[in-house]
Length: 197
Image (cartoon, rainbow, N blue to C red; front, side, top):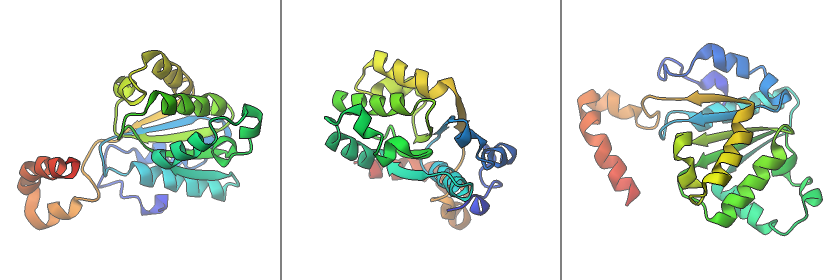
């Protein structure tokens, strides 16, 4: 997945100029958060991974974690003293991509671990987060704890670039070619319902 493979024509809500600016990796150098919001399939992960490839080309260390895997690692390290956590890849890389935040609500313990990560990385490293939830819905992600959600968002959004991607799913684009847009308009809700059962 590289930025060169991105189809900006398919996803007009993504501004090519803004992505080209991000590809300079100044945001990584400046420890800026990248928050990429949008429905499934619009290219959030592709964009963050493509920027990760650029960051590696610029000499930065990079890690990619699905939230579920990251939480698993953080649970194992829950009792580790903060000074020892600095050695963990998810704490010390220059650019960390955390993918799929918001698909499942977190327990209070997991939300606390996520807060610890965000708090430590704040102004020390660049963190990219992909999410299908608007920030107004984030208390539901973090165990309904509004105070913790506010603290997490305060650190993430203080120095950030927020991209809201709206549009069609890359994964379902074949439906447009084979059946036309009328098929998609009536079938997508049924596909989504079937996948959530």
